[in-house]
Length: 241
Image (cartoon, rainbow, N blue to C red; front, side, top):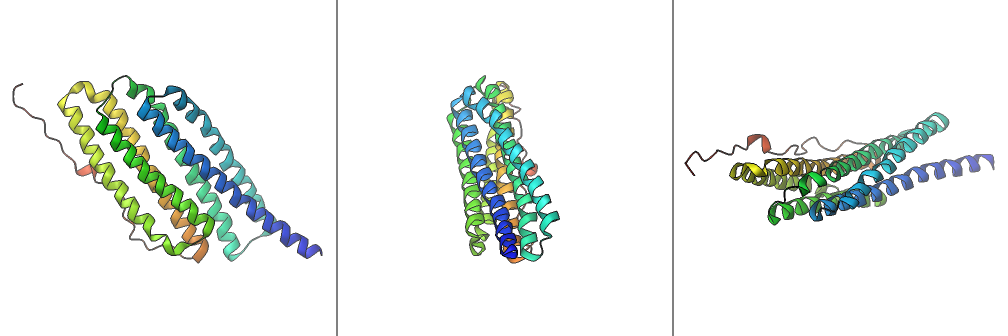
């Protein structure tokens, strides 16, 4: 009886960690959605809410770290159980960073509001965030289902996110070159776009961790990494105005 009780308690402890990851994931998604909504509509009250909500993810990561380390010390897990616990620690760190990136976007809302930019720029930001959010939601679904046979799509979409970010980077630079008055707000939008692109990277990290938890193997190393903004050069028009 005592042995069964110990196993049951062990299962409950593992399930608790999984539930906390699911809760953190849902909170991170909402933060990103609200941060982008605040940016597009210049809703500074919503932006302040996003900044304040970041503490939930900070607290969640600390709790998961503490419980995971205690579980390792108490249960001395092996094989898949050990991968599960170490994976939870890694995933919670990625989700905490997603929250930080959403908060960073929200903190720039007031600065962007001071100089309104063309609607096309905000459409680009929204499109980029939709891709990143889809990436995050689908990878959290994979964590719940453990259906790693579909996980290859994550890397493909990460490449799409990088390409869209590169295009948006080029467009923002062009606006700054056309009118120096755009420089301040466009610079803030560049940082926002980079934060969103990084959310896609963290979603890909989570996918790789899930694959390791389930299979015990690392995903192949050919993951496409990095945008191509380092290759962009916008030449100034030297002709007299």
